[in-house]
Length: 301
Image (cartoon, rainbow, N blue to C red; front, side):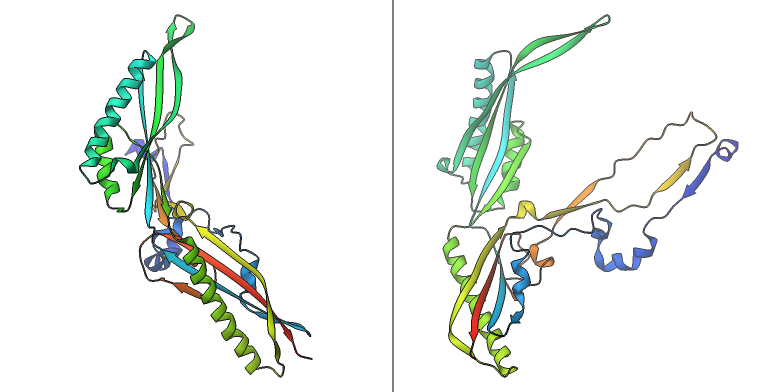
């Protein structure tokens, strides 16, 4: 008890005022950056979402968002090997890559959908300490290659990771999402946006004592694509902390426990006001396409 009397423990419970909100908000309320507005190419044109008019023109804008599941994925993992000579190093790496390729072939992945990309060959140096001297010496070579796999079934990723670990391939580089018929996506968004613009124009005319000419001009058409890799936010693990006051002794060493970070998908639809969201109920993480169109009508005098 005397030992503890020398130390003042000041316990601070953080975010206690937010406990009621956290029941609904989730642990994302702990994220460090609350002003998480993204910069995107439609930042200004998105403001044309509403109707505006002058003495001579009527400007109507519309924005449509599509959540689209990827048609295929490119999964990239890194493989490396170290050895005293380039030949030994390359043979070792190729042997392990070959074994990995045989394993994933059993999962139905065709060889034509796998590409091995040579990345680098570097010299490796190490050092030793002799007395007061640090001596650097050449210690062999390192070769790195990337294995790029085209997938249609995202569920195979877990199995590929396990098979890669058998060959000590632990570096998962990235997973890219792709759609094949982007021109059809463009046409779909364009048609939907123009229908919305027509409805907005009709509502404007119904509530105004003016009329518009039949001819109109499309002032702008913007299409933006948002990939999942750019749409993840993070927050530090939710926890309550305490503070230790060590004014009475400098002999105490503070050991900090690792606080993990959590990442979660936060789609662009959570940050923008749009006229229509297509497939907004699907929980699948995919590619988001956002189209903004602005049309100018000339008023009859």
